[in-house]
Image (tube, rainbow, N blue to C red; front, side, top):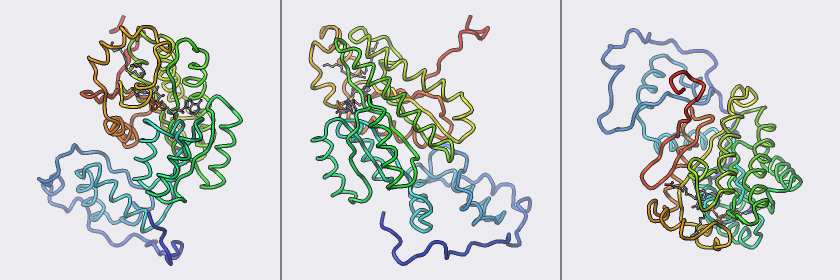
Length: 342
Ligand SMILES: NC(=O)c1ccc[n+]([C@@H]2O[C@H](COP(=O)([O-])OP(=O)(O)OC[C@H]3O[C@@H](n4cnc5c(N)ncnc54)[C@H](O)[C@@H]3O)[C@@H](O)[C@H]2O)c1
Ligand SMILES: CCCCC/C=C\C=C\[C@H](O)C/C=C\C/C=C\CCCC(=O)O
């Protein structure tokens, strides 16, 4: 999004006192339930930043707006948000995506850039990272995105990256812990990247977000929910990511500080992990094929759809979103200690 050249936002004068209002109770009751026929989505609560709410701090106007807003579809809400951002240029939204040079990470970066986020993406693969940076810079502007070499196994790399982002963009509002591999023979490496990398990224993010909130998206897999006979270690790392996320989500450091932590659990998606994974990296090709056949291979757009859902749903702290070609739902885990589950 273009800078508001010539507009000095601190000069915008907002109303300080509430205008004389018409009482809401004077509205005809039927008006309050009007549903414009052209809008089809389910109502969602109106969540606008405080300063927007203050601008519309006139009962009648606010209630009418609220009534209309809840029927807007997601894209219209984003559009409204973008208009708001461009007028008030209030605060840039800053994201880190790990393993963003290609595959799902790259698709997530692109979705964020389309929503005017500032994005830092990291990877161990510098060639791929630099190529992707060139593409992003051309499409979305050099100042809006940069590549940082970072191996998610390295605490030092991670810290350097966080400090760099804070120096450049002043905040971190979202981290997508996406980097991952499948490797059943080099299984320590698999655990180190898929689990320790997610833990490292999440904990640095929580520490930073405690001051102002934020969102942490941890990329697990359907393999984290279902046993996966051809990849027990991979499956274990992905299951661990789910419970790591669920556990932190219950902690007041997260849920009382406006932080949301969510896991994504996609089935097979069309990336190099499917194309390049060699047979020695998993336990038996004959076991993979039936699952590939059963689930198919999703286009990246389907997983991006899930990613945007995770960002937009406000009440998903601790939840895990399953994404397959046919299913896009949060999974619920039964509590075995509840009498009805015994
Ligand atoms: N594609 C699928 O079928 C699928 C399904 C479910 C979950 N996932 C998960 O999605 C995530 C992304 O996978 P993908 O399919 O895009 O794979 P991919 O191989 O296309 O991309 C993974 C990226 O992570 C980077 N990476 C690997 N090790 C790293 C490290 N130590 N530090 C930083 N970056 C590193 C790679 O260089 C690569 O750019 C993974 O966590 C994967 O387990 C993938
Ligand atoms: C051709 C080789 C591919 C090897 C697989 C590589 C990576 C896959 C990563 C995904 O995270 C796996 C995603 C989904 C599979 C999940 C569960 C399988 C069990 C499904 C079932 O029981 O129905």
